[in-house]
Length: 227
Ligand code: SAH
Image (tube, rainbow, N blue to C red; front, side, top):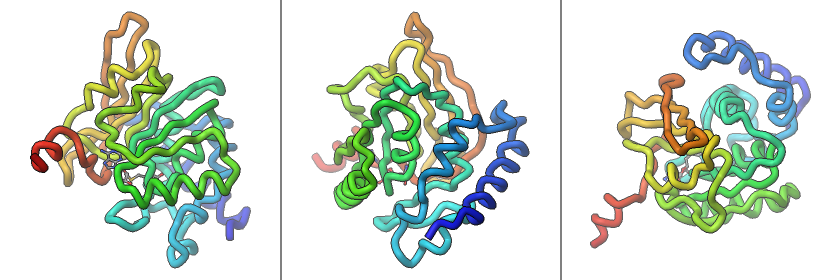
């Protein structure tokens, strides 16, 4: 399903887009280890059958339950900006298809990933297991709470847009750690932000670039609505 040519073409497009957006992101190129991991993960395996022929096009695609697998360029860029090291433990919020988690699993020691939609969490978990990725744990749950049992994390990546950074996630980030999160309203006006927690626990934020993500659901508002 994945031809070398399709992957090479996609990587060329991603490299071009990374270069074009360097004014925003401060990155003109992707590091060899990220490129290598990217080339090793078959994106088609994370898509519903009918969409597999479109897997190596640089676009987000629907994965059911109103959710999407992110655009390959964004996945590659976010992976780069996390600056992971082989010994890192990473938390992802928004497992979706499991694609981003599979990519991270090739780069770090352990990935924990939370997905609020139960059937997506189940499917992603099976898929990652079938691929032999033993260092990813998927759980169904609300990412607003993070995953305290495994905290603190060297890096946190949120793949759905929130109006504000959930406080539990800031708490669960290790001093010296990095978090990527799209912030902004449900539709339009979102920006990808990079948060850094320094060794004294102080948090700084910078805006990377404008983005479009599905909303982070759940949280206190959703609990309130149920009460
Ligand atoms: N990283 C995914 C793409 C994610 S799309 C991939 O590689 O395929 C965003 C995902 O976040 C969706 O699957 C959505 O259901 C999930 N999500 C939304 N709100 C959430 C929350 N509060 N906690 C956990 N997951 C959430």
